[in-house]
Length: 245
Image (cartoon, rainbow, N blue to C red; front, side, top):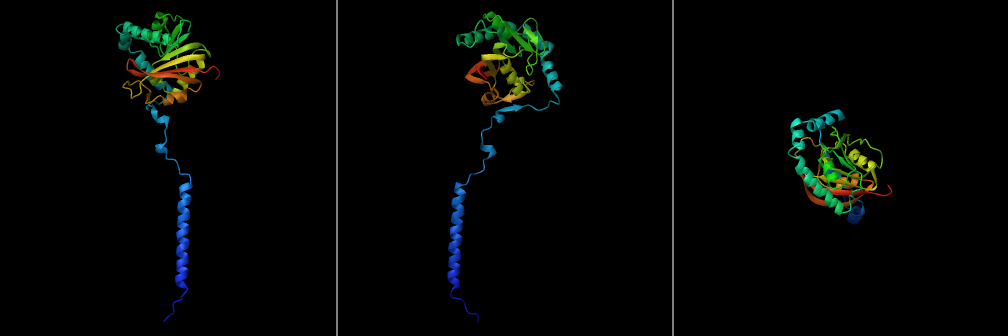
């Protein structure tokens, strides 16, 4: 019969203690090690601005927008039944902005995506005579032809820009970039947006919070955010371009 080495129990005990301390060391080390960030738990404002799919080219996008702008039934409604009603609502809105010192009679103003120019007519009614709109289809003398992704104006042209068609922008960065390019230093830009999925089939993006706008307006500071009732749009976001940008 083989004899058992009396030192074996001590060796086993020693190995057990070493193993125990090793496990304790690795446990403490893991507590102090930086943990990998989970992508799903990090705030990401890109999730709050989603571009709608389905455009094979920029030309196809433009054609879809023109299908709405040139729709004879819609243009009939815009220039008759909706004309006075929208001008009255926009006039009250622009009067409020004048009270808040965001707009003056001396402002050179632009309305982006103005269609038949109710917003422009409202500006003129409240005393802002140097006003014009842009849209893919002109409507003289209130609206000139222009693509809001590539405004047909020089740098620092306007004191004030208004738009309620942000949801129609296929390239929001270009949309906002053109606003900031054509605004004068200290100029004011006002957006009316809907912070929910839009029912309009012509919308090119869906906005779910103001956070993406804060990221996009790189050369401006946020002036205010407030709730409004603007023909299906529920939120007003106002930026003022920095004096030095």
